[in-house]
Length: 110
Image (cartoon, rainbow, N blue to C red; front, side):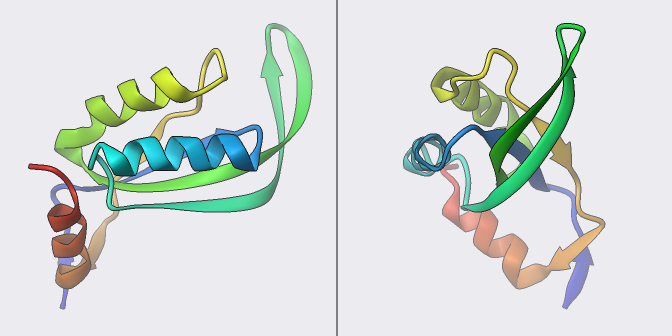
């Protein structure tokens, strides 16, 4: 059954290498702050940084968590990330299956 979601969140972030993305994912999972992190290689980013247009090849992280863990997820991400300003973009799904929402909630430390 698909239900509106009150607590499920998807956080987008990027990392400069596969190794760094895996370290970030491991830190978040070990702290039981997230249920899953998908690592999507091959992202070409073009962005403005300190007045210049930059380009980089990055790994996109799709981080599944809950609303009440967002502050801790951000703090952990900042602590292990090499970027001065890591991406931290939070999306609230319009709906999820109840079973998937329950799995995410159950995988995260209360």
